[in-house]
Structure formats: structure tokens, C-alpha cells
Length: 120
Image (cartoon, rainbow, N blue to C red; front, side, top):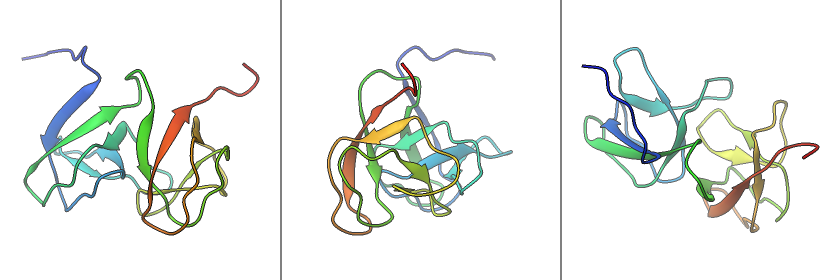
């Protein structure tokens, strides 16, 4: 049955262990998996989930800010980029439409990120 989601949050089984703040993709089995560097991510995990457990993501289309996991120290106000392990960094090749609202002092820090538009 085809459905739609208007809440901005979506719960699916996890294909592997996921931690809060990681970017998520939907795999061919319809499960969440950690989005690698060039994967198309649909949102960010709002809690940790073990493999095969349910995980809820805040979809990129949801209003408000996002809690993301830093790959290293990040300066507040920096444009964010995807990393291979589902985290974000302030350097990279293809920027996300996110800017750090606060600084991260070390890898795995959870920080708030705000949506941004270049030239808007």
C-alpha cells in the first residue's frame, strides 16, 4: 500500500547499527543504513538503533534545525559537508545545505545545524 508522510519523521528498520546524528539513506531492502560520502541521504537519525531495530529519522524536508554528528572539530557558522561514516565536517567536496549553528570541539560531538541556501 502506498502512503505519504506529512510529519517530517520516518521510522524504518536499521540495516546496521546507527548512532544519533548520522546521515541516513534507504537501502534496496527499504531499511535505513548509514549514508556514505556520495550516497543520497534522506535525513538524520534522531536516536541510536541496533541492527534490525527500528530507527527514526528527521527527514531533510522537515522544518527546523537538525542534530548532526561531527567528524572532527567544526567552527560555528561553517558550511557542512558529508563524510564517509555518515557524519559531517566543515571541509569536503560537495556541500550539504546545512550550516553549523554551534562549534564541535572533537569527533562525534553532536551539534545543531541549520538549513541554508547559497545566494538566498
